[in-house]
Image (cartoon, rainbow, N blue to C red; front, side, top):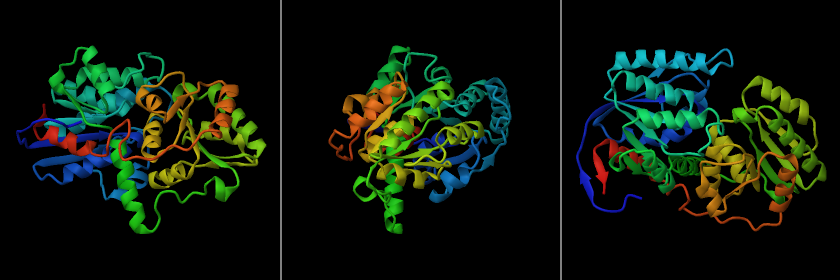
Length: 380
């Protein structure tokens, strides 16, 4: 990434970054910090309110203060309602602040609404983490549709990997509009390491198998398509494995109150199982680094696992991050409870992964590459 001759064309611009959810905030912190180093940018941050508490749980530890905070959190389960409100309110922000460019990340409703609002106001849109595809509009839903739509609205595409770059080319996007940067979540893990260690904390504080007497497993489940039978089957697998005494589970629950209630009903009070409320990002990363194994349907955790040198079992039938599977950091196990149980037990027989500065998803310098491109510095 970034090899070759550098042609420098410095561009001053007013940028408006749209963030709505925890994954977006995590992955945009490095970009926002990199933008602060370049006074040529007038950079504003807008939080949509799709996920509450981002200022405190993700942004504040890095000294980032949003300029605009909306209140778009939905009160029902209708994505149509949420999306229409987001487009309207983001559009009003764009009209007031006269941005030269909109910056969106990933594939959330806030991201697709930000891209659509920018397009409708004739403001260029840059897409961070562009080009991820499963090829299946139903999985993940609605993220696969959102990321494809953003690909149409955006004029600048920051692809995290060569695979993502090639996906965009196949969809007819011009090569000069695509830049392979690496994934900013690798930058974020490295930032977290540098922040925690001087404070006397450091990653890896959570108890490991030798200290705890059992292999420690971190579990998350948040994909909308997995909220029903998949979640119940996963909880059944966790309960079965915890009963063996060879594994201890840290289940970090989704903030949705109905999901939390279901997890509590299925797993609450079980021996060898701790159920956690959503954690501030640095605490979550410490817990992940102290685990022996991760189980998740999260895309971001597949990338973070690679940065931490951890193995993650992906409870989905496909992934838009095949690089992790090819590298051996991720294994797709599906959603059948028996398959999950078998995969967890098999993991105990495998040698631990080694940690490396180079990952299948980048080298921790993605934010600098993104800002270079925004400044008009293009790699050929």
